[in-house]
Length: 327
Image (tube, rainbow, N blue to C red; front, side):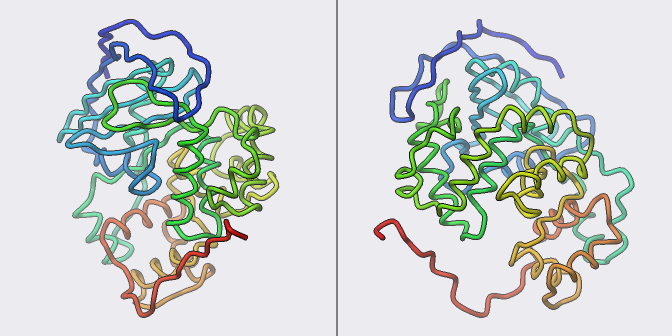
């Protein structure tokens, strides 16, 4: 990958509330990334989006926009994805970090070596049609952990709405010419008042988990950075109060592109995997048994199942999310 800088980096800015004006736009850092092998970059990157109205990510025309809080500060990243070339531009204090991390976000470091799709005819067929599916990684463990906590034991609609509210109210306005106001996740999750969590619609167990983790953010990030592989990451994350196997798996999938992580405890996932591989529902134990032949690549199999669009027909009404904010 080669990077061409077209303008100086802006200096660091103090944290601002999400509803403040956007910071002045400086010239971006630009680069072109050519993956060594064919990769479905758009699919890998869009997997990181939290719903259609995610304030940290959107698609406008042919450009994917993503805002993140990197170790060097907030960065806005714009990606124009071609067949074999990704053109990227980045703004903000974290722009250099975002450009350096780009191959991992696009799935360039995901290695499918050893994966055998022929163990099941459906997986073989989907893999034949989608050989370029890769798992992207953000390397931003805390914000991915926080977003996973938002999604614990609630509908996606509730989780995405709460995420949108908190990030917009307490995040930092994105630098650069974003197509709409966009925001980086908050710098100080633990300083968000209890009434704001309630107003956003997040349940107290989830908000308390985020706040407790945020108070230990630096130590969590140091421990994870020094860990090696999924098992150590799992041990560190599940040692935190309120973080179970599902949240740990979701965090590892998003932050590290863990090809073997399985979100045990997901009501829909086990049914989807069971229906795809056997034609009928299974529970978590049944799902793990079905995925065992692909150990080391179990998340890859799940990603292929979803890419293939193999879903059990709906037989009942959708769960209506409850709203406790007026109680």
